[in-house]
Image (cartoon, rainbow, N blue to C red; front, side, top):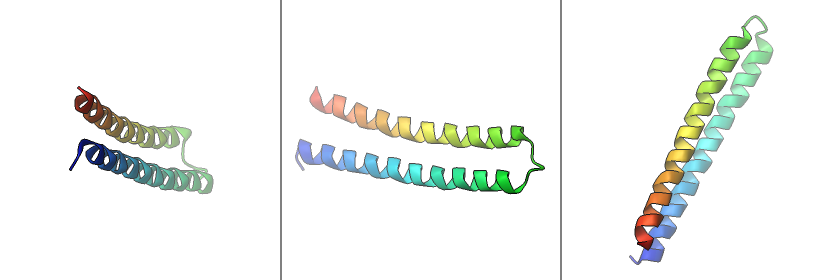
Length: 78
């Protein structure tokens, strides 16, 4: 495989991983909102803790994937 083809596949894998992550985080966030609206007895603290955990996972996966892709591209151009 040539360099261009290798980076194309790396970019494709990164886009797929980020897309799947956004999909699953969206599903979790929608479920969290539905749960919070249905159960008014829950405290806002629970809502914010679970929401923050979802956000941290999203950022970890997206930034990690982007960082790996950036590292490959930087290594490939040197």
